[in-house]
Length: 409
Ligand SMILES: [Ca+2]
Ligand SMILES: [Ca+2]
Ligand SMILES: [Ca+2]
Ligand SMILES: [Ca+2]
Image 1 (cartoon, rainbow, N blue to C red):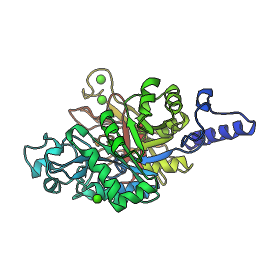
Image 2: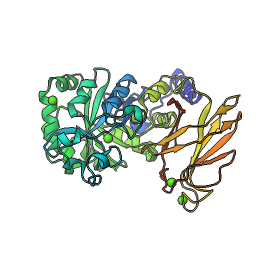
Image 3: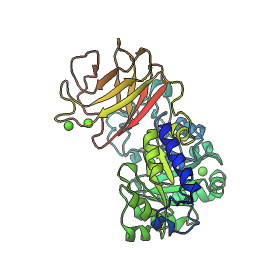
Image 4: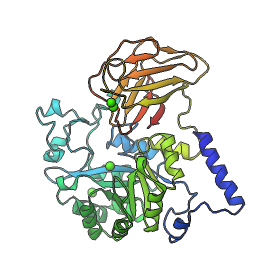
């Protein structure tokens, strides 16, 4: 991956030396003062939900990881509690990331916005990620301002605004009146974002001075982009489906181009190669290291993820031949793979059982479903597909909790 970056940079330098422009004719036509429009400038890095790959998402622990990474921003998701308090949480329900079944039996499928602030404070939002984070609470919006710095600001996503009527006015008022938020706004370290165009237009009317990003699963045509440019500064979309034409269209509309959720160094590099201005991902520290030409996973054992078969023919958890992740020993010595943990973007986990020492160059297939274990296959015996068929990212962690690699397809 570092070789890939070196090649790209060398190519840029060579082109500059002979006076070639790497900017496409379409892109060259845009105004020169569009922020981030210089093709060779490194992109902004934003830690997704703080740094959701290394700490429980949307918690203070994840914001601290985002800050420590040296990223330009960390991202949060804001919603309103039943009694109107702005809190930070991604999902529409507490089921996936809290211990709601223990504290409020029967309410796991209830809207997270149906809980009062006092009720939310009784939930553990860290244990789902690991025992080390047990007791981590659901933050207040202001907790993000407390962790942010003039180096690492905050992307505030207004999440599911239809579940939180009035959330735009609450966020706008905080940014305008709370000294911590005002300082960050003045330092140009705040951006507000959302998928809901009507909500974004509402926020833009309330706080026209705050940079605003329209999120979209795909990049629309020029007419829609021109209309977005009337209230937004930036467009954020899925890196997996982004094309060069999309990037040119966004920049020609005078908008900054951002992508989510680029988790592996290879995915970050692919976004850079397309000329994006801002890259949001779950592993901001590793993204920053990659962009700076450093090893993203220093001091590793040589174990990497060599691939992933997310959607094999037939049932993904059928016996013997279901979905799997491939772990490879790239070192020149045997490495113990026992106890390795594989975690996907939704925090589904696969493990490797005991007795797996991989010879140099050896590969191990780690299956979600059932099967008969062998020297090169370990079966978790699960009954539900884990790997997203449309592409997923998977992190490889050592038995002792060291991040060894991140793969995305
Ligand atoms: Ca978000
Ligand atoms: Ca406040
Ligand atoms: Ca299948
Ligand atoms: Ca699957």
